[in-house]
Image (tube, rainbow, N blue to C red; front, side, top):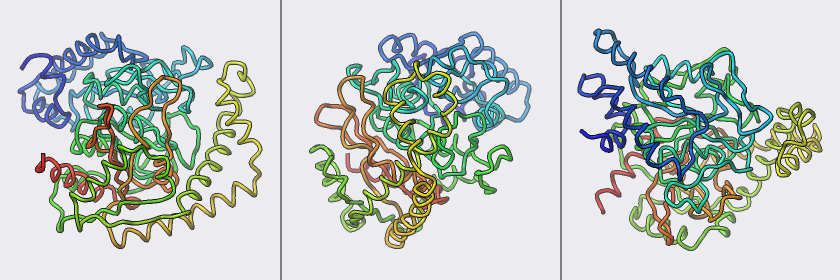
Length: 446
């Protein structure tokens, strides 16, 4: 198999081949480095890349496997990390000059878990400023004149450009689902509490969640299994077992799933090709697609998410604001200053309302297996100033529900558009199984 073929391998297939002795990790990593050389001058996905260190990890993985020792589920597979995730051996700069040259003393919990699973940490990918809206240098891999989305811009673009099979990002509003849609990859945000955020830049304790970018649903389940689990250093993590996630995701559902196409006033901002694509998809699914209307509740959800996010980001980034306001973007300053104006009463009311709104949305799962809605209003916007609108992502972020963007559509401009599926909180396996079913079903009609 030549280098371009190796660079395009799905992670699950690469992990199986390495474990079976059919593929060397060092060959796979060299293929990814060659793909970076070929594409990254245009895409600019990487913030920190240590080639020698990546190859050292790969060689060690090959030596371990050849010794006959037990190997982990990601043994020898390269993974990219968003540059707001601490790594002891690579800088973590959080997309801001205020943290330029920052060298964490230890790995984030999720990085330690990746290493334990045998993964090769290939490098760090670009994030927007403090994982908010102000864009970094990254371009869309399908058209460099368009945004890759944000804030996990580099992670999504690196997978979308074929540079790496797996990447990790974070989402506070729409920072996994939206860039996955724009870059034409699978983007999975597990339930709140699935993956530890210890060692990850904190912007909003109630909303920050870790997600992944992959080439398939199976790959998403594989890496999520390795990342998820309780961590005493993140008290919001759940004491649940995630070991069976890949098996559940790959299983045939007992009954063909039912999808709830979630309508609301938010659709007024959807592009014409988004409307057309979902109309075609609902017609293809026929009776397996229910038309649900969330009405004004969707607007209340987004307002509530914004209130909580503004208040918590003002608290989390207050120190940086006081020390380095002059080095922050105007948009981030506006967010922090508006968050400082949220009263304690308003914040507590928003938290209480979020619980009520969740119950209303959760009731929809009595009639369907997954809610279906756009990942973004349309394809990636032209220009590099805007990272796009997360308006369709706030619900899953606010309620901590698992969500996945599936690269199933193409817009009129030839750029990818994602179909977002949202599942019941902590029912991640069912969501991935449903997503697998939908991908397979549509593949049969092509």
